[in-house]
Length: 216
Image 1 (cartoon, rainbow, N blue to C red):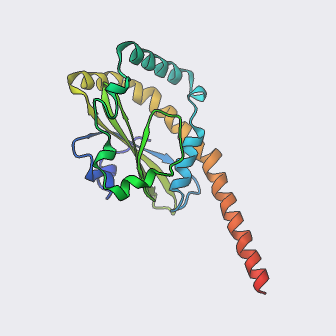
Image 2 (cartoon, one colour; image 1 turned 90 degrees about the vertical axis):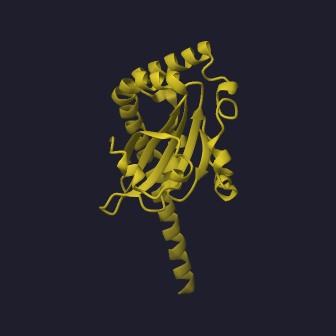
Image 3 (tube, rainbow, N blue to C red; image 1 turned 60 degrees about the vertical axis):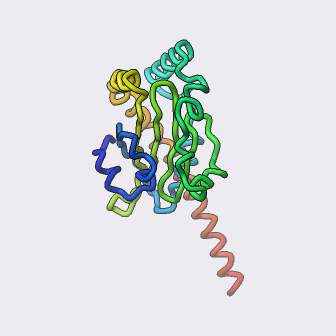
């Protein structure tokens, strides 16, 4: 579900310290039934485990196929146009202790690179000839005892060309990409995150039960 940009700016995320020259493009929330306060790493792992563009709806696969084809033809995604080339990585702005938080990050085959990961927020980035994008993920209490995932897209378009590009893809993002992403991410929690959480809780309960029996 799309939510107001103030839902992102009002929270004390570390990302605010490093992205004053980026603009907030979108903020979305994703349900995570039965999630608890310590489940953010579980959710991130579930998202990376479930990532597979081949399972995306046909319209989404078509849009991304067209985008990557255009990028290849026009040189939008070359190393020189991306992170470390046209744009400096956000990682270059981080204090060393924060940069170290992704040393053991779960790998993923998606185009984004990990920047940092804390107990309740993480940042990933993508750079090309059109835009430098930061995907910020946050773990937020819902008020009913549960938690939800929030995603904020922070962007720095590459001049007039980048602004035209972002304006051109806006209807496709809202009508096709984000609705499909919502279904995919919420399903990732149901299929990969929640079962892992329940298995871990069961294992902890059995361990605690064994210790109690042994002590008795």
